[in-house]
Image (cartoon, rainbow, N blue to C red; front, side, top):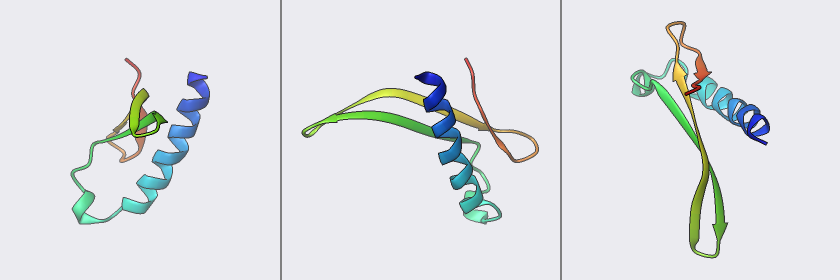
Length: 65
């Protein structure tokens, strides 16, 4: 399940990275964080958070800790 989420999050981050590439207002972004959230009514609980750190080449890579 975590591997599926990692892959899905990577797809999301790739789309975000393409959308913000070259835009000066996003030049300082060094981490993109994706939360998987379970919502029941008005209550939302984070199930998993995944970080992608910006590498020296400008690509965002999955952070494993």
